[in-house]
Image (cartoon, rainbow over all chains, first blue to last red; front, side, top):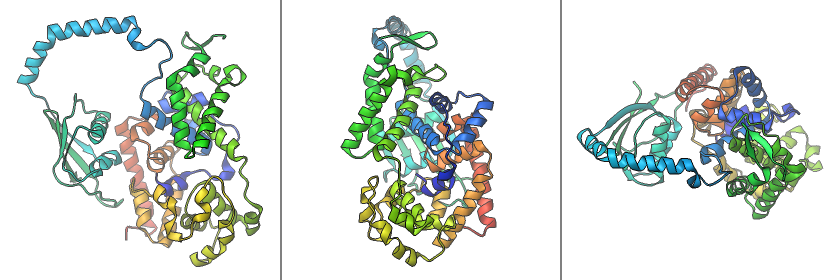
Length: 195
Length: 260
């Protein structure tokens, strides 16, 4: 956590308001489902209220960690929808599987992209010394980060970094971009300074 | 148990919600994240369960279906953790001995005991806020009384002997963003000046930009999560953040602050 930055932005103790945001409003903010007028009001409050800010940022941690709703009713595998869907998928695989397989073999898909290096990508690249890494948490994090940035691919088997990456910490230095090529499930990565 | 209509006509029973293993695990995980001791964690868990059951599940029944139930529960649990912390440690009081030393000493106690900053950091923050004018060596002598005071929330409070060896330094250290990294490379006087510039620049930002910077650079939230809060796409938020960084950079440069 950026202690200096957080400290410079945290409201002073004497400024803590008495009236807090409703819990459901904080939840709506975390989901991004608040209309413009209300959002301005809520953000104004959040910038001055340590308690509400803390609830919001802890909620964000939780929803990003969980990613799915708790199941309150029947288990999902016991629903009619699940059985209908399973039957449909079975039929599609039987009928279309061969076609899909052949198509996939004839046209191996290559994805290329250039992304601005953000902290999440830097953290992943800085995580180890090896230039190639395979199945595991680091590769999963890379796949998740790339999905989040809009890259559509099915699965990653490995990642290969062109050369060791060392973070440039300068606020005043040039930015960096990450060139990515995903081919046959392998992500080839190269970092370059922005021109 | 009376049933409640909670979400878009779906009938949900608060007792059933609380009996869900997912929810119980979530409460446990949140308490674990907030507290390091087993006792605190256990009592936190029980406090939250009791609070959720209180007044015939009043807090759960307050859900109006405007957000997802799961998000509401996370927010609710986190708010109850804050209540528990307050209850557990009581209304925070600064020891009389510390208060007698003055406003600066109370600020040091708050920073080190409650907010878990190091004494080194506390000195810098005091200088930024104009609460302390003497030099660092004098400061280290004057805080002796504060060091001897108990602090339940930060058990290592009394065991910090070497100014540079504060265990919290490691916990708080971060190279997570360019602003933080810049501050850490500066010497004490420049660091204090940079802090003032950053604070002033932040105060002049529009409300959405302030929350964006704080979430991403202050709380290490993913850009996509912070973007959602101010209703921007991740790429638009990234551009906004870059523009904000340019503002910080210009302010720092005009104050004569650059990397050593």
